[in-house]
Amino acid sequence: MAAIARFGSRVVPELPQIVQQCRDKKQLVEGPFIEQFEEAFARLPGSGHVRTCSTEYGRMALYFILKSMQFPEGSEIIVPALTFWVVPEIARVAGLTVVFADVDPITFTLSPAAMERAITPNTRAVLPTHLYGLSCDMDPILALARQHNLKVIEDCAHSLGAEYKGRMVGTLGDASFFSFQAFKPLNTYGGGLAWTRDAELARRVGEYADGEEWPTDARVESILRQGKLQYTFIRPKVFTYSVFPIWYAASFIGAKPEERLWEGVRSLNPLPARYRGRYTNVQAGIGLAGLQHLPEFIERTRRHARILDNILGDVPGLTLPSTPEGRTHVYYQYCPYVPDTGALVKRCIRRGVDVAPMHVDVCTTMELFGWTGASAPGAAKSSTAVQVPVYESLQDAEVERVGRLVRAQVIRLGRTDRSLAVVG
Image (cartoon, rainbow, N blue to C red; front, side):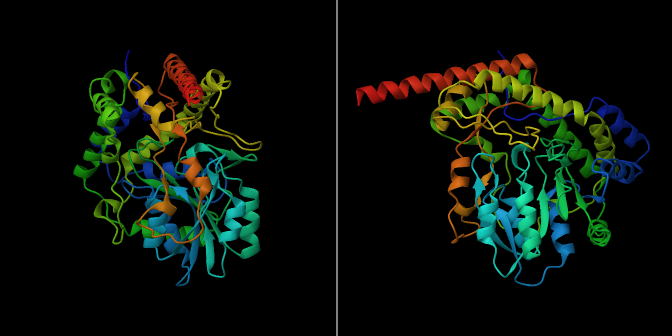
């Protein structure tokens, strides 16, 4: 049977025609799609101002927002302890002091109580991360922000389309940013977008975005080629004979080859050259098509999550992902707790399903940040969940296969643990 990768890439069926149209009109870089995409995206929330940012990295939208907010020297920003390390590092590059606050291990998102404990006289902003496709509990976060006069910048990289009490994530605070890299909910092969409530803030963000240079045609073509290769190599029939054998071998020797796929942890000051560059016309054209398909992409992924819920819901020792009342989940990742993360990952990989440990970071434990503040037990617990393939491009039968395998292996691990306990 074909192996199943942990990630999927949402590719619109119109992609070849969009790319060829831009090539024919010599509009790969500059062109009318950019403004059209911004206008279309702005219609999703129905309020505020949007601006595309960066050729390759949505995190640059965060950087432009923070610089545009013009915080005084010595300002602190509260960031969840469980997030991708780049997020707090970008905040540091923008001149802020990062203060970490713990997360709720049930939802993996910022704990309002931990946020309150982290506030000091120097706190100027908070950066709630809507992680894995689920919104933070925003009402108490916003109430604390109003009480202490803090700016709220939402990290929506995982969660385009998710809602909190009927409102789209990214429209609840003062500003937000979205990522459009290959595995994100909207894939335009890189780049991102900033949303702001205030027109003056939007104008300043726009000045930063316009201050970047246009990429060359060659760079854009390279990005498109890389995206095509990523999509090709993670399709089950190709993944089985390309990348998967590396994962399979690594499961026997304790290696972590996936670490070579991610950006190495390091200081980002000064910002690397690849971070620079303006969002391009061909990316915007892909994004326009992606917005049209977004509802069906989300519904397919939710259906896959329901399939997994039905298969895994009664397994002893396994805790399903939670969706609290008033929130919706778009399942960028499907993350259950299991009894023995390491053993389950190995067992599933050796049977052709790339179940993976979590790939975000417990930032309070990273040497890069040298954190000496409060511990983050919620983030530490959250990092023990696993990532189960659920993405839109899988067939329902493939999702059922994934669920049955995880179910069988968790049950077998439970039997092994009970046998060892009896022997002991």
